[in-house]
Amino acid sequence: MADRNKFIAGAAVGLGVAAVAAAGVGVQWPSAMAETRPAVTRVSTFSPPPGAPMSFADIFEKVAPAVVSINVTSHVDLSKLQGGDEGDGDGVPFPFVVPHGRGQGPRTPAVPGAPGGPTPKKGPEMQASGSGFFISADGYLVTNNHVIEGAETIKVLMQDKRILTAKVVGKDEGTDLAVLKVEGNGFKFVQFETQAKPRVGDWVIAVGNPFNLGGTATAGIISADGRDLPDSSSQFVNYLQIDAPINRGNSGGPTFDVYGRVIGVNTAIYSPSGGSVGIGFDIPADIAERTTRELMAGRKIVRGYLGVTIQNVTEDIAGSLGLLPNQGALVKDVVPGGPADKAGMQAGDVVLAANGQNVASNSELTRIVALAKAGDAIHLKVLRDGKTLNIDVKSGIRPAEAQLALGDGQGGDKGVPSDKIPVSPKSVVLGMGLTPITPALRKEFGLEDKVKGAAILSVADGSDADQIGLAKGDVIAKAGDHVVNGPEDVATAVADARKAGRPSILCLIWHHTQSGMQSAFIAIKLDSAKESSAK
Image (cartoon, rainbow, N blue to C red; front, side, top):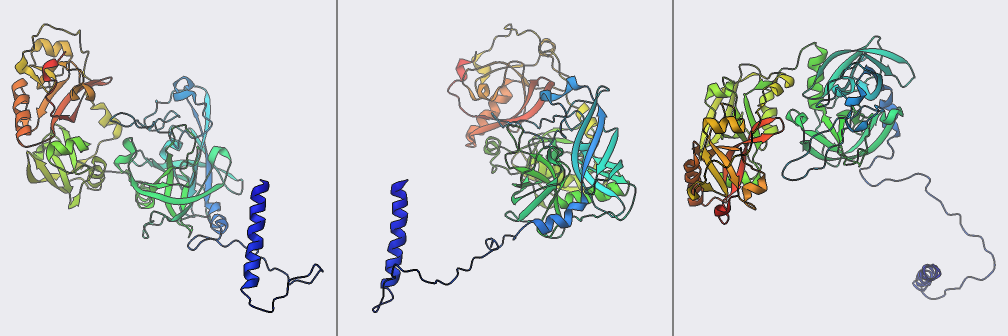
């Protein structure tokens, strides 16, 4: 430390000498006597860098009266709480499981009644809290659906300490938004900004009720736009990512621009630990305004419907189809009798564009379709077997999410593993020992009638099929452009893919999961080195 101080002092002296020397001749060195020096004028106000606000105080003072705390009372079965949460907050912003392997973990709501959480059951009384804000002078408020889900009573705590009782006007699980109403008039309110689209890098201020602390403001910037989250909520919302810290209790609160306009509704955070790490997600103002306007009018949110199950085009899948990664949405299943089925769509189709908009992901396609009204024609550009088709689908009405969930395959018991069927070398393809599905195998593997193709009897150690997680009892329903009825169809498809110079082949696989058999398209690399070592 002494050497450092000496260096600083020496530098100061050196600068002084240099300044004097630069003045030229006739210089007189200062004497040791005291002398009167002019007073140094100090700047008393902070000057921020260009583009930054001097302070957020004026914004907060302007908007704070419109932001409220929402306290909810319900009865839940505490034994059903995930992670031992005791209900000291709203349960969201949700901590997301850190992505691992080839997939991503789901949202994990901590409070029963939140989307994806356990169903509330009558039990001990529980208090939970979140945030909300007035959007009209006559008492309409916006918050998250998960904040008030399962609520028996809803109390609104105003900035002036008044406590008002609220009722639910309408809610939409798809966007996780809800509209409440309190009696009275003359409330301070804020407005959604739907004209000027916020940009990445713009300043924002989030206001809410974190940890039941009451009106709290945090500031930051928009750090990304158009984010998909690893759960079903991204079907209808392309989130704003903000780095203004939001925490438990901020859910349903507003995020403002520097003019005090609402540019988003706080909904979730990314958090491996459950606490804020500075990455938050907002429902954009245009989606929130459109949804809340419908709910205030007493209308139910109705969305368009194709009747297909879709998945993203990954790098491996793109290689097998000759596409670029993140280009299109892959149809893995078509609902029998649904709009897409009636229009002639098939599993394996890749939707490249919808209503003139290029499609980059399954979420993007879902959002475009959701905007359609029942009976509207949805114009699709589809890739099938290497050819581009134009298909018009007459939109249906999307069923409730709970109803769609009931349509998931239930599967059955895989049965006892059996070595009764010999696997010849000709039946081993890409490290998988294959066989046609016999009635005995269908019963043994618990295969539903709709499951058709070649059953997997063995998988070679270290093969790509092994790395992916394919196992005995899974079924290959389609390989490349070939519908599969037996091993020879898979072998033919693999030969065609190699001839075309593909690095992998796209297969529709029925795979056993904890909830039964589920279908998905999977790209299997064309590596034949271990095809003869199936176990």
